Image (cartoon, rainbow, N blue to C red; front, top):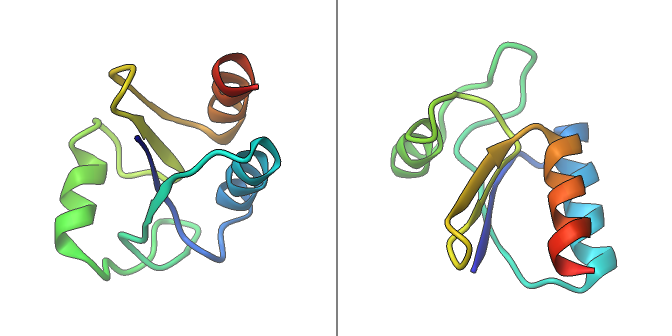
Length: 86
């Protein structure tokens, strides 16, 4: 299962969502905080804790539980999706 930690107003998250939609891949969205340059206010403490468990407080954050992969950075995520889901 793919999980995307993201924010609706974030252009980097939009890039990842567009690639997921283009590939027709099912995924679960988590919105741990509001958008903001320095990180917006936390809106969901549980998903925010899951996000930061990866080592950073940064979105987008992808979790691919089937492959045991987690990653930040939209370009890295898009490249990973192209490699494994195209």
